[in-house]
Image (cartoon, rainbow, N blue to C red; front, side, top):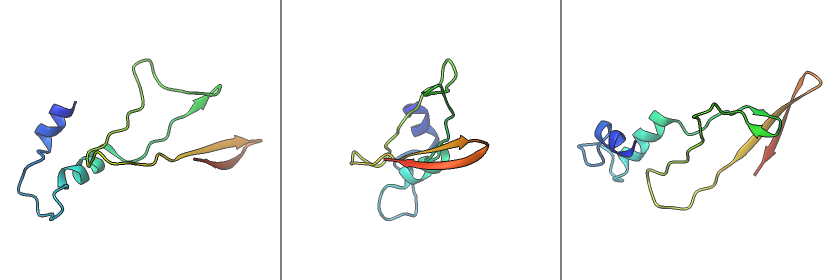
Amino acid sequence: MLAQLERVVPRENSYRHGEGNSQAHILSVMLSTSINIPVRGGKLALGKWQGVMLAEFDGPRERNVIVSVAALSAGKAKKTKVS
């Protein structure tokens, strides 16, 4: 996967961004920075071949992962934030 991404968005190119991390910005837009995953029975409701991937294109560096849980209670949406 990384080789294909490098082919589509090369790290070294004539980008007009002075910080040198243009590829990371472009890849984060292409691949998204957040997802919604349903939970059923206390487990992630993923398909047979699905998984969750965290990709760092501008590192290595320390990052925080934030998990927000939204639940339905008696037909009304209830949002709970978990860190």
